[in-house]
Length: 256
Ligand code: PGA
Image (tube, protein in one colour):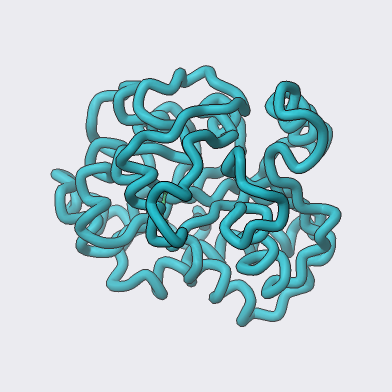
């Protein structure tokens, strides 16, 4: 089962995720990180930046990207990753890839898979979860075997992301996202979620049936998952007290 860590705040969750990344990078300075955008990972990046680690050799692969925004658009995930991750953390820009950042869109998915494979695979994948239950931009119905490919965003996701754009119509219809199969190949998944609006998606992902209707439930198929949630996002977990007990009594040698 996924390890579920229930914390009091998004800041506390960011420290835990930063611990996992710090531990990894101290053991392998060339580690491969799976990078997520959105509001959720911001406390992780902030906590990590405050530690002043040398992350210049770390390789990074973003989960997803919009399709159809003009190059350099401030809300393209290339721009967001540069602004929120690469610059504050001192990553080396040429070592950080975003889907469809080179070459034609038709082959961008396969190219991205090849690049991830050539890097030796993702060691630690940071994930948020959408209210539709998506991870990456794998909307409900996505195959658990899917690899990086172009998808159509749901109207719910477009509405949720409209806050980043001047008008809701500016949110692209299409995206390119690592598939659920791609995500499941990462060696460690760290899924973060905060707030009541994520409670249903988290309960479904962690405890619901494994179903393409809730893509986040794919995490149940992975042997090493850490779910870090605040009280509100944990509020619909039937086994919340058990997760608290497990974490409180966890042997220190197990790490995250
Ligand atoms: P959020 O998005 O972190 O901005 O809530 C998460 C997601 O849509 O995966």
